[in-house]
Image (cartoon, rainbow, N blue to C red; front, side):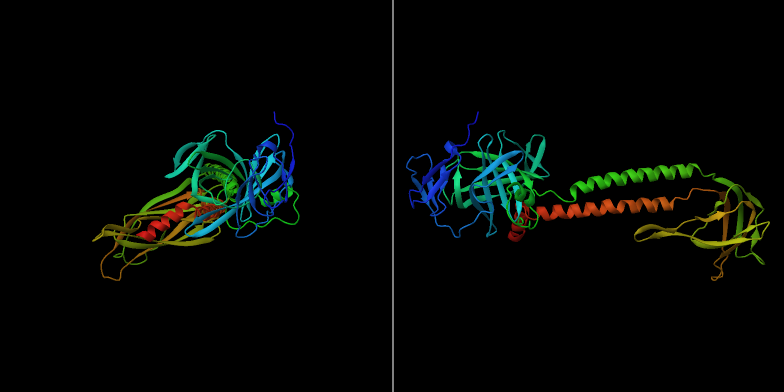
Length: 435
């Protein structure tokens, strides 16, 4: 069982500045904040390991010695380092804070451009695999895709650490992501150290350590930053599909509830060779029940020709009429691109909300007679009462799809922006430039 922390107060053997060692026997290296000397904490005389000249003195956002509560435990910041990678000749640096709890050991807080991660060392090795053609690792049933790999160098340190190192030393780092988590592998010649990080909002860090002011705003999209659209996408699609299913059920019930009663059917022939009046009226038919729509369907034998039919649906008792017309055309042939067709031989028109009563149709057919040739068509008229009419349901269904599609596009844009920062994109650009 871990013991209570033993704090030692010492002095730097290089400049005499006071030093505090908070992790007791776990500390192997301590760095003097005044002269930036790395000292061997295992040596009773605090032997000098290295003295380095920093390009600039970096002040930690969380001062050494600060305590805060994260993940149900109290942690003290005992060490701070700045690490750097170089990608396409551009240096990128991030900060790492070493946290210590005498009963839970060490954890890390990493920060880059306002993005934070709470990191713990893994005790079990992830399984190496592939995902969508990329290197990946699998850990506790979750696959982490390789995001970036590079050589990382320590460029600045303060405080104490449970390992010995030198400023300027480099390790090979590979990051694998499954937002909001990330697994990192740090490889040296002798070993590989694996760690698991979880993304933290800066505000949560500031609250945990009771830091003054506001946390620095996060800039850009970080590798394992959770998408603000990810959870919304699934929930929006779930709600949308439920509403579409309800709409489909309503459409089915509406269709089943219609009478679809055929009240009239007859066949006719029209020819431009006919003389005199071409219009005619049909026998009377009865429309029963509540006011509902009436469908007039026309089936023809048109062949590379067109016909125009004017209709008037007339109430026998009141003389009230409803006018409508249809132009039907059908052409087909063969050309250099193969066979083709245009239009169709059949058509229909739906007249809404016709009251019950006795009705007949006045029909006036017409065809092209400008070329001097005789044109004719045989056609069949069918009249049905109260037929299904579902365009409003289809329109509503399409409108319901707009929000989830919009959210999905935003989520896809977020992921595209995320992977634009990965080493896979850099490698693709380099390959293109080489070509």
